[in-house]
Length: 339
Image (cartoon, rainbow, N blue to C red; front, top):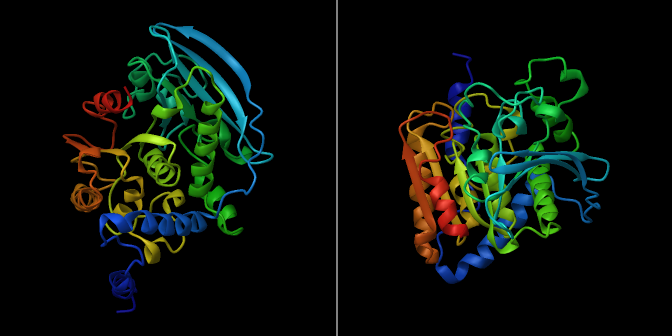
């Protein structure tokens, strides 16, 4: 009788987010700017001045069909981020760039065909299916940031652990004590990756795409919501409702933004991407982000896109599969919208 389940369920049922777009098309821009400003505040805010990127080329390797570079940049003052850059060899630039964002696992190497130790992978690619390579082979210049807390960007205390174990929770805890969030850091660092793209002469900045899976889907959706340089976005294995996914189980702490449900539910938050192009990819058997709330989120996004007059900019593929990349339709969609 002393279990607090009923109490917490009641608290969540009573929550009424302050932002849920119910207006007309002409009211959309003002509503969007208000929510965007509030959301950035809840992420912890971004630096007022951007540090010099100071890019350094770490390595370069020619492979069949593409060249793989590894570059590092400064994101926050005093914080460096490595990235892979996959450059097609079978066509000339300027290229449409796509920022490819990995999910939980061993980091950026996992989606560019490498083992955790940096050696070329010999076995099957797994649930993320080397989607960065798939995009490069279709002619995109693909930028793959190493998200904070994964792979080579784990804390020193975690370096001895299995490569799939991240530093997300401890970094999240340290940032929360300072009024920051790891989600906010990853969004801002992805924006800095786009700043880097702007310095490359082989990139067409009018055709920037973004694709992410799982935790990388969060980063893709959140970044596209606040950075209008992104033309077209694919969110795989993430689009849902907070109540139907994040509150149903204990997720990694990188999913939690303090007070977010007082402000907005996930579909309205993702709707900040409107009227730009958005593709939702989800597996019907996904147990991490369950399918029924995916349908609820998509219905809500359809309502917003229709109201704003951009229904043709929203597409989806619900496939037979679990928490994984499909690509069966999303790659073609990116080609169509970034061609």
